[in-house]
Length: 239
Image (cartoon, rainbow, N blue to C red; front, side, top):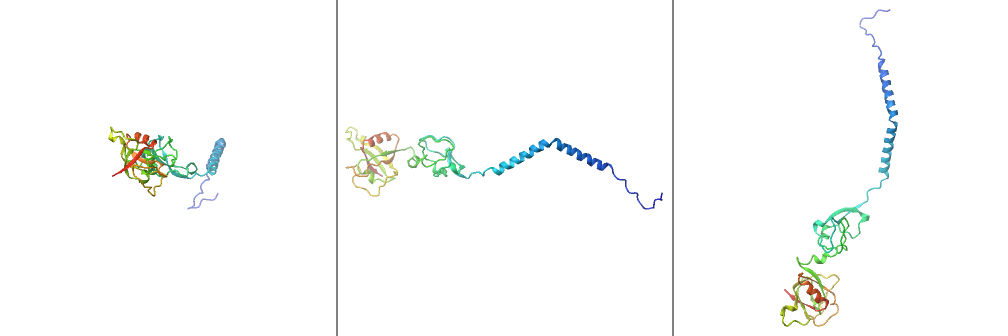
């Protein structure tokens, strides 16, 4: 045996335990993977299905903002701000003439009950255009005026409505059906040229059979409507 030289170190002994520990850890990992193979396979299948669904799902349909009722709208009642809201609906489910502005729906009056969520159109709530122009507390009555009176009137005029039937001699005021009735725009009626004649009538003229829309008080409306049906209503312009 050769003597050790001074100033030199003996090399460290090899660590034989490290490879054994790594081998045991590898075997444990492989055993865990083998026991969990079904769980891992199911997880991989789930991820694959999820990815396929996302890839095949069609894009969200385009939407458009429209006015819809937030509750059922009753027929004959004017639409208020609290009755409607703007909602985004799929384009294919919205009519072309659907309203997109709350102001275009508020004040209109539906003729039939309208369920919540239904896109509103001008045809569904067509009753408010004329009614909204009447003074508060008034009602609108279509009146067929006797003679040429209708041809002389313009929207915004005020008239007293009188009956052209035989007056009651015992009641001088019985001839008056309504005082200060407001003339409203009448759809589909054109009055470009007056046809002449007195305000109280005096002979039928062509074009005077169309009804004139008048705002009157609720108390006056029944008598005005009844007289209009018999064709005995005349109008007197008042300030």
